[in-house]
Length: 476
Image (cartoon, rainbow, N blue to C red; front, top):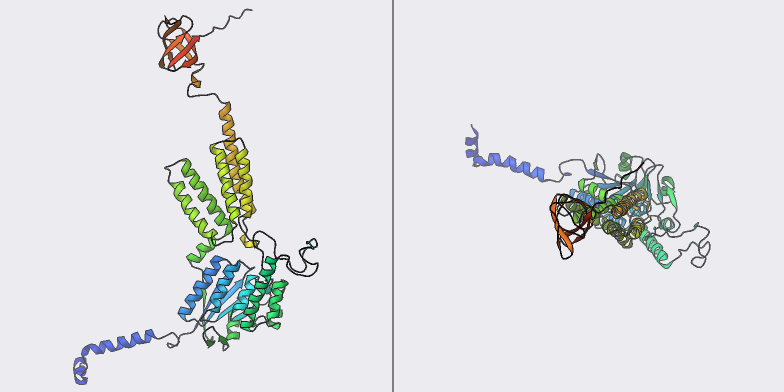
């Protein structure tokens, strides 16, 4: 019996014989991974180096993707000296609102979760550290080019009018406000996760640090893990309270995926490096100046506009001083003014001073990862000063050099009479050849054709000539 006879006997249309398996396959493929019996996924991301706009964007975007993918656990493998407060808070907000458990793990190899890293560790659902790592030193660093907020153990020459000796109290109202805000913030995170709030406050007020074993003993972290496998084994079966639900981790046979930064994260990390942003700003400014000086070239102008836009995008994400930006631009403007309209050093020296001060003040932060390299500033300053020195030298050479064009260039040139001069109005008038050109000429003395003359002056379009003085014969 063929299949058509079988279908007719069962009263099925022949098409359903092929359609039913396809529908069943589609239904199976549409089931979640757990229903298919696939292993659960654990995503591991690197947070290495200072925390800034690039790392914030990298973590928050991938955390949102992990929620959509339904991963079992999101692991931040951390090694950071700290970073910007705004970027840190963006990461913490994403963690607190996440629908997937987040574990922050201070990676092996002597890593640390200092400053902003301590806050992120406290905000995470799970806090873990590898042996021989540390966390702490969470005292806020002052912005505006000042020093870190004074804490106990500061310098001995502090102003007693601003702070009582040995009191450990921040010197100014703004510093006290920053300290109290940071303390309240980290204590709130500690209470939310059931961790040691008193030590968290000490990490802010006294900049204390802990090793991994001491942190576990003090209830600052949840466990110590030497590698990812140990971390997952220690967390398997643990209940985690999320913002909107509670989950129990099932990490047996979980598939570990190490998520690498995409081109967007790499590009953002590149241009938000203060040194790169500074270079882009300089290239942009000089590119536009070159285009204005030589209109029509195109390449300097296009390059300058692109670099300036990238620099502005990067700088608006970084803690910059607008006074520093203003001094930088004024300094460049003065040095360029010196090049185009030489003032013999006034504009140039003032511009160089403003340029250097503005470059040093550009980054409004004391964080080591957000400072412009002094050798880089020196290189650009030396280049700009070289331009203005060259312009002064060119101006001085031009002032001392002989005039080669215009009326003044005619004086002293040799001439030859092309006709006899005729008297008129008390002067002798005729024509002479000067530089291959025939000019009307006048002279106070008679001139004959072919006589060698010298241009003594210029009266409109009439040259004034005089006979060349023949050298006197030399007698022995």
